[in-house]
Image 1 (cartoon, rainbow, N blue to C red):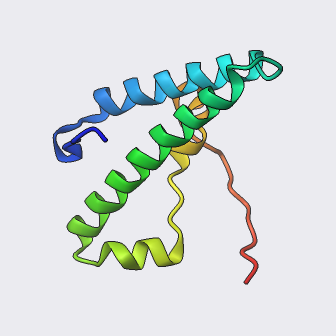
Image 2 (image 1 turned 120 degrees about the horizontal axis):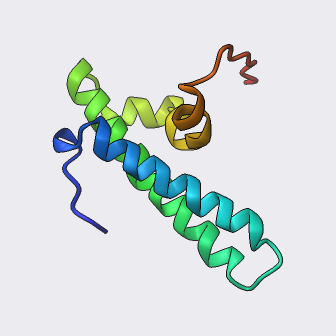
Length: 101
């Protein structure tokens, strides 16, 4: 995997990653019936997992908690999961959810 130093990545670089992911998602939707859909989906998942891990590490360091605790509760990075919402609209107006245990 790529040795990534997230503490050096500012919003501009993170925004570029979100734009790339958004474009890959659009390509994936357009190619759902092609043989390229599975490898493209895997690439998107790998990009998301890489950045989710780095975001968890950074959050844990800044708030002096264990990364394992974040993995245990299952963090969710909205920007990585919904880049089109954050890039085009600046985020969600309302988020409503129920956590089932």
